[in-house]
Amino acid sequence: MSIISRVKPYLKWRYFLYLFAMVAGWPCVFCFMGWLPAWKTNYMILAVLSVLTAIFAGGKSVPMAIKTLVFVQLLTFVLYFFIHSDSSYITRCAYLVTAYSLLVIQMRRPQTEFVDTNVSFLTIQALMGGVGFVLVMAGVLPVLSTFQEFDGHIGQFYGLFTTTVSTDDMVRVAGFFDEPGAFAFWGIMALLFNKLFIDNKKVELALIVGLVSTLSMAYFIQIAMYAFFFYRNRILKMFGYSLLFIVLLLIIASVAPELDNAIFGRFQIDAETGQMSGDNRTSHALSCLAIWKTAPIFGVGANNSIAIGQAMGEFIGANPLVFFAMDGIIGQIILWLPVFYLFSLGKFRRKYRYAAIILFVGFMQRPYDPTQMWYNVTMYMLLLEAYREIHMYPGRCRSNIQYTNFIPFTKS
Image (tube, rainbow, N blue to C red):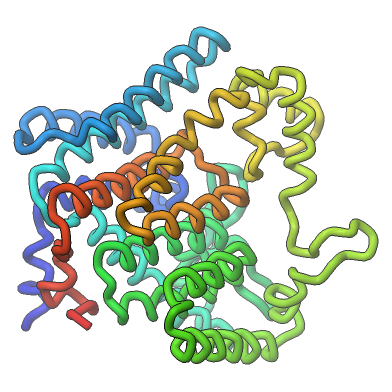
């Protein structure tokens, strides 16, 4: 089968919108590399195209449970706009409306088309990142170009992947995300998409092995949980996979001391601080805690919390308390509603409870962020497909990955 015939089923308008939603802006870096226009322009285009397409989409309505979650979040963001006089909450609304429009489009067909797009996109990055990681360690893959990211970090493009963390002896693969931890986090989401709705073993193996190249501490923790939840009843298989995974890490760590420090050294306790060496969140969380205490119910507002953090000389993002500081306990509960709903679906299928726990642990390191399109779209698509599997298409695999010969994921 030719490449064109394999790709042709995916050359549809809706697939373009799904992929564009993933690459339009942060945490992907295509706009910073100059491959796409500025991220604000991309998101405005995406919003207009998604809403217009949804208006003329027709088909079945989005389930009421998910509509209610979206409405509650929208209403909360509007109220917070007035409470804090902060226009960033309107931006949150725009992202959420765009995400809902994509849900409406996905409802036209029973197939898990967004899931397939996301899994393919992440798995291809994992394959390229894994190969690139080996080539860099072998000294045969140089940096091709550099670029500046949204937060001022300098990214390096190696042809097969990008990164913000590299030295003479070590590189941490970030795929085409803003940093390695983000690639690992969204790789876990793709791994869950595959396990929940596709269960393709080749995809699973490619993601698990390829994402090792991120050398992400959070990834190692989440992948251990993934193995426990989904393979604990198959002791021999789990033991075999775990042993191979540890051997792989030992081989990588033996290449250079910096790699050893990046993998195993991050779990060691720092004698001075009493914290794990890889813990780069606690100090930020303590700053957010101090801000949250000043306004525990509704927070101090998104923009105001950033201004306070800057006055303190402290970066307040990327920690589990950042949205407590911004939005207070009420706002944080509203942000977590999709996770709570996913957990509740565990009464129908235990796998959804497992997924919710794994994601919740991830949110402790990389908080659920309504100012990123990825969180809104992927989380609500996960809820949509879970709902449809339980109530609309029980016992039916609806993934195109299983039925087509799309590179490189044929049916296992």
